[in-house]
Amino acid sequence: MKLINNLNKFTNIREKKMKKEKKILFQLFIVCILGASPGMSGCRAESESHDYRTDPEIPVDIQDTQDLIDSSDHVDIAEIVDTTDGRDTPSECTPTGAENTLEACSDNIDNDCNGWKDCDDFDCSDFCGGENTDELCHNGIDDDNNTFTDCDDRQCKDFCHEDTDETCSDNKDNDQDGKNDCEDGGCKDGACVSSSVCPKENTNALCSDNLDNDGDGYKDCEDFSCSRNANVSVCPCPSDGECTNQTCSDNIDNDNNTYKDCNDYSCSRNPNVTVCNTEVTDALCSDGIDNDGDTYVDCEDFDCTRIISVTVCCPH
Image (tube, rainbow, N blue to C red):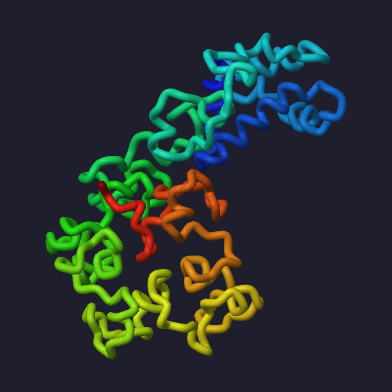
């Protein structure tokens, strides 16, 4: 733990680097300690160019570490820190998945076998402390200092949804998107909201009756509830649209919205498009796989919870 304590002090001195940088600094610190090994002279040279022992801003215990590095041509890391430090060694650990969800960061298991578990793992920084209550997720403050405030913070996912019969009929803007209840897309198009609470336009019949059934100003195939719904087959992709395998892979911004191909939600969040690595169907949102490579799996992925045709992520 001495090495970690030293690193924390060093990090605070160096203008409070961002959380992710802390992990990188730790790795670089380890490399520099082993710098006497062949091929690591660049790191040694950097250490020698600044003698931390004479720097008045560096704590004494870090200066002692510098002394230990300089005392031998080959430094034994065990002399500086207990490398196990209560952590599982690779031979004792079997990876079970990423450690970047609320569940994985609170199960007392080193899921990714990187030697750190739960809130000791930097990958859990979004789920440890800070914005994790209904009050903290609606106070307008970035409580955990991760640059995301309230409903923009993934920690607030369970407190910032507007996609159930209850949250779509309470006259509140639960997800802080500026729209209440049935004016909110999560209610109007949500697969988890009954038509008795919010009128729908999401079936072949409702998408071909020439009526604006959900009262959003768009009717039939002009309504995304129809045109971007895997359960609706009566709405072909418009000629100036970007919603087919061909238009989503031609490197052209066909609909002139400044996004092209799989960077356009009309492609990446369209269940009818298969050329983009997506997570937008009931099957893909319940297979235990991070299909789109964004490090979030199934219902932890907004692409699952914000797609109108996905029902497996509805609250039960």
